[in-house]
Image (tube, rainbow, N blue to C red; front, side, top):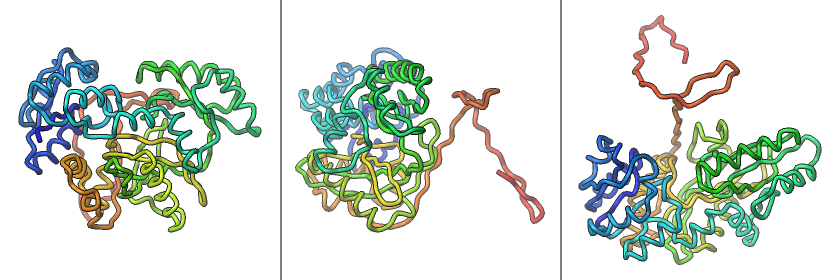
Length: 368
């Protein structure tokens, strides 16, 4: 196998390291403004994309052409960019290049949150009360009106993730503005302004299940993670395995994720996400790709998820690939570079990270 890594930065290097450990040669791609990026020199070969910035990494035709010219047998999309793009996966397979990820059909199913929700209902997996598809502002208003006093709805981009295109609405007076902002953000981030609406649940945990499948209906749950600590619907702290779950509830979550993945004949890695209370849970979405936080499941279980993906694509047996070799806790914390506004809100900011060496000694106390 020869592998093209259709991504950049940290995840491109992560994939390349796993491939190189298996003796698989790798090809990097880079935009005109990424020539000095580390992933370009970290892989065995590199190819220049047409254009600069994000658009260069979204050019399906260009990437497939490079993979063909460099005689690559497979493409790994990483996360973001084209990782959940069914058209890209189809283009790869039509060119005789294996797509290291779910099938185009699975990407289509779980890429649309409303179709994923309806699929969960068909599998008798609980879901949060909400719309069956994209909603108009009037339909969102009707759902909000149908809820008990003081309860709200969550507007979410029907195609997307990462907290973008998402707004909470409790007061009717804020609905129009929230709907417009969520639609605009979804259109800018995902090229689709469609939103769906679901009941906003309070005091719940966000638990996700890491699964792997071989595409025949044979699936394995490798571990779970707690991603409840979030800000603006974006994860700040993740813990694997999820602490303080009863054995009964954990088993029920694993069973639900397994049933969903098996019914979809899931191939490669995926994450099934749930909102969890003390004694029940609700399916919210599936991410049909490797995730940023996959590394904490690797640390907790000892399973190299990227290598398992590649070995599965090479024809190895799922049963031998996804067997945890250890059981321990792992925590991932994200560092956000931001500035604080006068009103207490934050916005992204660039800058230089500097190392702080705290003073030491028996009488020194350092508060962080």
